[in-house]
Length: 370
Ligand SMILES: NC(=O)C1=CN([C@@H]2O[C@H](COP(=O)(O)OP(=O)(O)OC[C@H]3O[C@@H](n4cnc5c(N)ncnc54)[C@H](O)[C@@H]3O)[C@@H](O)[C@H]2O)C=CC1
Ligand SMILES: CC(C)CC(=O)C(=O)O
Ligand SMILES: [Mg+2]
Image 1 (spheres, rainbow, N blue to C red):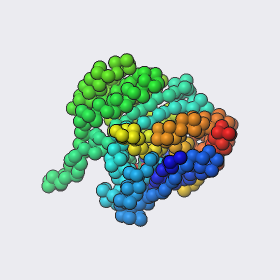
Image 2: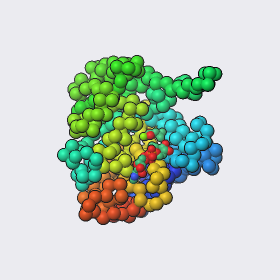
Image 3: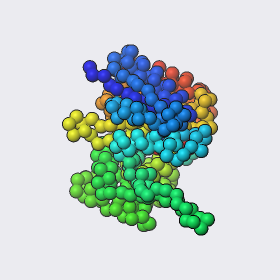
Image 4: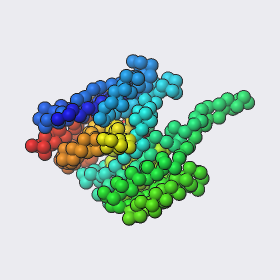
């Protein structure tokens, strides 16, 4: 069997704590399921800046480009607040996304039955929630030029970011959303702000044309992104697949995270286009949350977003569907059994730390895989 190569980039803050729990699962899968994962490790974010003066070294970028998949923890923290903008920790993640051409970010927000009470919304609004945010990841205001602060010479400065989208970028992310909708409930809601942004006007037109040309069997709705945020907390179950740009997708997925109980629950997959010859996609898997400096180093972070990101890796990069299903089932069983990290703690449940949550999920996964 050819090896399955994985690059682990734990990063900063709670990133390494959460990644430690995935390492245990990989070790088990290699030892007992013959999974054949070959792992390598690298530095990204603040720790890479401390070691190399860059948010990711050229060597680690090469490793990322060569790996079948990258597992990413989180980056950033107050320690690096004053470092130059170009080498701030977050620049490492943005470079990975851009250089690996990971244009499609899949952020599923699923409310596990046991966590309906952990959401800040009424349980009946989130029970059974299963939505997928498809966020464009390599364009928009995160990457558009010019991006600068200029001195106006009159005691004033001007901060400039530029929102840019070309037709092909909108077409391909819309295609991903429509394809995925066909495997779910066949509904897509596209969100932009065409009432104030030219890029929103184009987004709306291109999504509409792509739909008409190739996906007219899928139900399509358009919503202004601000109203979309409101609808996500008013009646989230109205959505199936949401497709939106880089910035709105970033914001709306943090909102969606809270519907599921905690930011510590939301996984994500960032995918490139399939290779014309092999069909393989470049891919990076990361939790939606950041480095959580307020709880880092305490051993209390919820590792579920990181573990569920690895489940997405099994499914999308290695077609290990049964293993991915079992790992997701293991997470659900552990939550059903009342084991909780602090962020999703509820009355009558048993509070555990990061490592015990990881061990309990591994033990359930082992039983399901037997
Ligand atoms: N993908 C990445 O690496 C991302 C990095 N960041 C960076 O992370 C740093 C902190 O950003 P924040 O705005 O505080 O966002 P954050 O996502 O790190 O934390 C927000 C809140 O959620 C909680 N939280 C997050 N993940 C959790 C988990 N697994 N278990 C329990 N609680 C959890 C935190 O304790 C905090 O109260 C910043 O430097 C930011 O730039 C932010 C978002 C994504
Ligand atoms: C570059 C990241 C820190 C932006 C972000 O919050 C995210 O992608 O979720
Ligand atoms: Mg974010």
